[in-house]
Length: 238
Image (cartoon, rainbow, N blue to C red; front, side, top):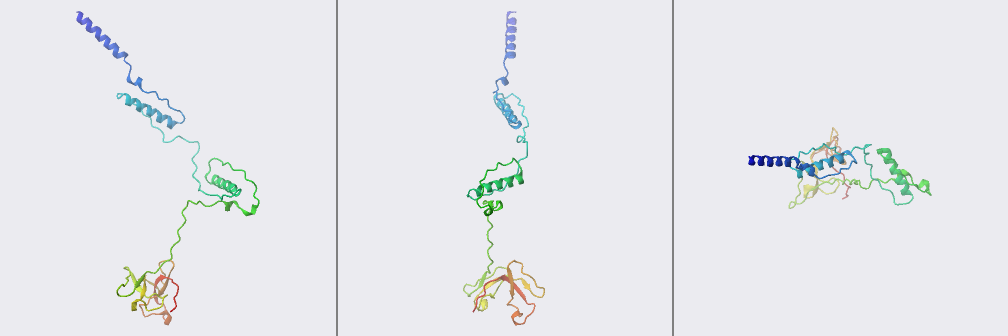
């Protein structure tokens, strides 16, 4: 009988102890989240839930879907072109004001704060359009190289050939007999130009010269002779 009473007493103590034991969640770190915007507040709350989960594995965190970025009152204006001004006062003052005004008119946004510029001593010397210098960061277009006719022919020991689809002819701008007598010539595309149909050269800047391989010679009365396209060169006298 005493044993039964003792067991009942101990069981009651264990039950009371289990009921009064604080939950693990009450020991989670207290994180004070700023309320500056919805996105920051949401991310802070999710961090607090994650920290509590790390401390209490049995805790079920409640994660919130957060916006990507905080909302803005106005759309973000597109960036304006970068421009530079001459380092000469007061021309630089007028130049900067001109750039700010043009950017505001094009892209909007907040109204720019313009500088107070002193009067120009020679108003006709500088105009606002001339003051704005084009963006120096933009790449300068490279000059296109002048076409050159590939050299071919030469002596039998070091004869230079043309690539496939091209043919070696005598350079009409230079004296001599060319490849026919072991001289140098030029490589041209084996594609007819001129003729009765008046075919034009496919490459801009090239000219149509007489094809020395046929019997038609415009200098000897030949009409509608076919030719070949090559880059024009300076005529060399014999």
